[in-house]
Length: 353
Image (cartoon, rainbow, N blue to C red; front, top):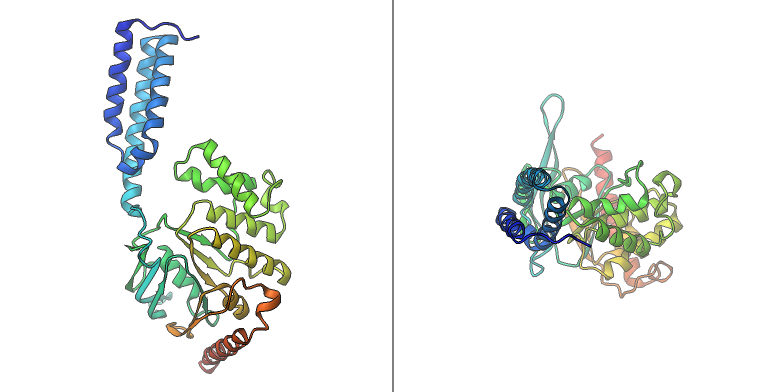
């Protein structure tokens, strides 16, 4: 039972809370709306307990820590909001717009090597787009530009209606090799993203358990990545990417190192997960069959410096299960056309040798 606080002291604590409320106004509006009430309640409980247990010296110490925390957190949140331009996404706009993007890299002599050349691409909200092209044509570079990891030499990229100037919270990225922390359990790997974004620990853990279950890894929460198979690590990486609810998911040959059967299962699970979210997907692959089966549209890039050679509508009825879709006439037609385009571009690389 809490001790009774004298009226004068209660007045002092009330003033203290009001001062803290004024300090909360220094935070960005988004952050204040989401966490303000919880922060205020925590502060009031902490100051009351500190004062009743140890008096004014302990209350002074709490205030010193509070001021230091507010000073550092306010600056961090404003910088984060400024760099990430973290406004609410506009789902009426295309998810990704690539306008006349070009990119060149310099070798050790300072000579520029063009990789991307005048690429135009639009991905609608909720759309799944596959990207195919010869090895070394710049597919990964294109994903890097969309993600804000690579600055283009020319052109402009927008994600959810906002120009890409740096890393964006609206984008998730699934790499060729899973980016799991080897020293952390699967649970800690999956909940890392929500924690970095300021979610309460208990909420982050609950969401992590939910997503681990959605990718079929229930019971493996306390295992480490090295204790799982390749397919299970990919499942964990998928949960790690989707738990942050990105508006755009970039995937760079994420299942390329899996065996055929496991890859097929993962691709079908990916489609199921995308069907339950609003995520837009840009999926880089060398597998023509997977590109057609997974996507609404297939983009074929030329040999480097890459530009868009062709764009195909994958107008095959859903659901597209592997066992049946490959025997459909439209699938065979698309496969032959895309294979012909890719073969022509691959041969260009050999002609240059």
